[in-house]
Length: 328
Image (cartoon, rainbow, N blue to C red):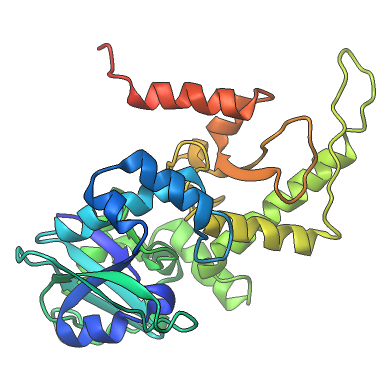
């Protein structure tokens, strides 16, 4: 059984229908659907990268396009999985049923896209509930800040990490949560929220600001001087750190919070269970500057492995590694 976080269509326009009709749903553009039906993954990814935008309006990456391609299988094959959805100040949940999904061609009702023909896939689920199994409402504001972070989905759907599954079950069952709430990092999050510090929900924004500051510091200390080797001149081409951080935040969201090269889920400072997965800002062309169009966000270990390698060549090697069969 998986626990998945989900949103339903652009600006969640399908949510009222899903809530009232006991369903989960996703959309697909009419030009992409035939490629998906014919199992032409490469054609699908190529067309999506060339013509589509992410939910934030940024150019779609190959990894994000690949995740788009996988979505219909995730929705249609779900059976017995718990699905969670946050709507304003409430957390809703349901369990997927074995019933088959259905797909229809219809006019979109998404804001700004009204009348555009799209395919909509719907999958039956148990009735949605905004109460735990003991009858108490699941109010978002009453959920611990640390839990808010991992229960808040910023993309179409994401599977809850294994280390957070037990908490989600306990929350839904109405069980005692003190096992988690008594942890030192959870207590610290409560203290920070009382001090008016940035909420855990804005973890992406805080991570982006950290990366912007680090890049600015790196730029200030790299002016092409000769030491035992030449340090490359790396300039920040953004007007200030605030604009820089906003750009990086949008970049992370455009990548659907996945490493731009490997597709692995990004983790964030002070929230990570694996420090090698923490997000790291990479210049696509290592000879270029910190500027729009030359930046991507990757996992820390990927940035270290790539170093000053050619981006396309490094991606080629990572692709070989991902497709290979372990020799042991």
